[in-house]
Length: 145
Length: 66
Image 1 (tube, rainbow over the protein chains, first blue to last red):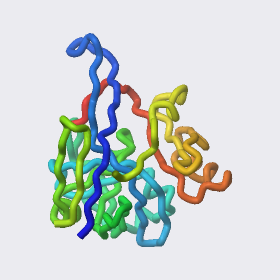
Image 2 (cartoon, rainbow over the protein chains, first blue to last red; image 1 turned 90 degrees about the vertical axis):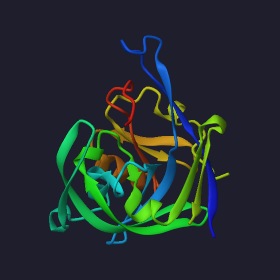
Image 3 (cartoon, rainbow over the protein chains, first blue to last red; image 1 turned 90 degrees about the horizontal axis):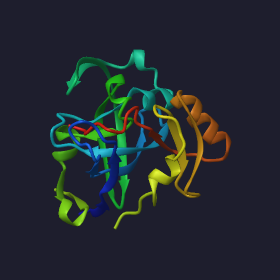
Image 4 (cartoon, chains in turn yellow, green; image 1 turned 180 degrees about the vertical axis):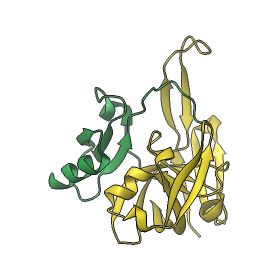
């Protein structure tokens, strides 16, 4: 059984009308090696996201891993502020280190390019791992379920 | 505790919003940046980093993720 604890990453956000003094976002981000079906890999930031149905990554990462995206099966994904984003699927391996590694049918979409991070969602991640978020201690733990 | 890049904000300091950045976690330094992730990744690999960490500087660092 694998278990690993990761620190939250604190990201200062600029001031706006709603938050005139700015604010701090504390995000449960981890660093992962993702390996595509063609054997190419890259490192990226990922966010365990219980609100995501599946695992999704920026399309730019598929391109730099030299996946021929137009030959990949397509679907549509949507989120806050966007919907009907064409999403290309590939079976990849996600390795967070410390024995936390899994294979998942993941989507790559331009809709995730702006954030530049991958989302680890219900299908393929939360179905195999238990995640405990302890914001008060600024750590989160991932454990194989 | 799993290790992470010590201070991402320091590594991204001065890099334009919207840029993709290739970081060497081993050397804790930025290797390349630009608008094209593939070009940035290739440049980092040419500098000897087989697996750079790819990060994107947000367009506007004022939005909360939902």
